[in-house]
Length: 226
Image (cartoon, rainbow, N blue to C red):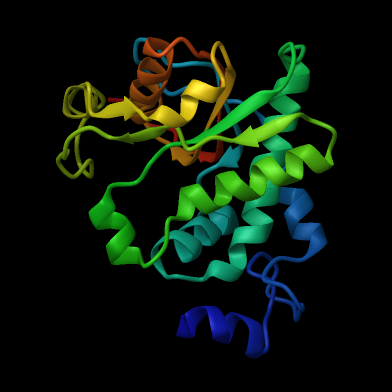
């Protein structure tokens, strides 16, 4: 709470260029973050992974912004990062020809202990902002937090792609919130994609409930080979 208050009251500089700015990211740097939106798939590609789109590589000021928002409680970055996520999603849907009807935006859920430790649900909040911004851009998008943890998983840090896939297998379940959107076209959203194991597991769970997963959208992508 104190960090959020300081975000509002303290003199701020743009996280990208370092110049004084009323918000955490100036328009020029924000435009730079989305300047290389495209499909980025991890190598190797895990089975069942939908086409992944991201704004850019997980590096530089984009990486710093994700870390500051997610791990350091700088919640003032939610709005610009939500805008990045929304722009990436709209670009992906346009490139894919757009699904019939609307889409449901489904955030990848964080473990309850992680939410407690951070004091907020970073991906859930970004998903809500992105869905709202997508509607403002003319896309029929609804936030549906349809996934939940089915069991505890080990810390993913340091695991190979194969180990991550085994660690996450059958770790997510679909909640009743998806029942109001049978046969929905779903867009999965997360902050970053590394091996793609988490997004592949999320897609598996949604497909098991009859949803069509049209794309996975993240803010950034980590290039990783293992």
